Length: 175
Image (cartoon, one colour):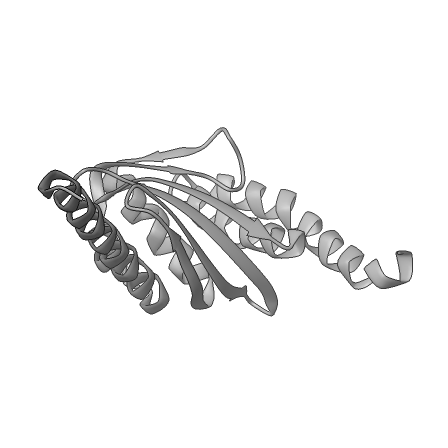
């Protein structure tokens, strides 16, 4: 292999190591509920795509800070168990809880040339976990826009969460 090929390989290895370091810091901050630590890993113009609805896209550190404060107040016991990918795109996997409800999360992150996270797309399972998260998080976020909105969010989502958890308990019987 010529000198150029070795340099490309070394550069790719360095980029992968930098991306892995960024996602390690992201995971550590999330597990600790450290909003500022998490924000230190993202680009100023970061975009987060909601796992709940296509109608909500979080743009920039300020909006992400507001969201993550409420997320960390809603989700407990976050524990990452996998981080895979390359220097530009990585997938992170964790288990957590919303109250008594188990939750698993897959997070796809895209990193920019500065090894900062520029885009976050989140997926959750199982459905009762996602619905419990939605029912816990939506009223907290809505409250920032008025008490009435928080009440409406709670009234709309609490029955959905209860019904989903109930249906989940019957899954083996129904199958």
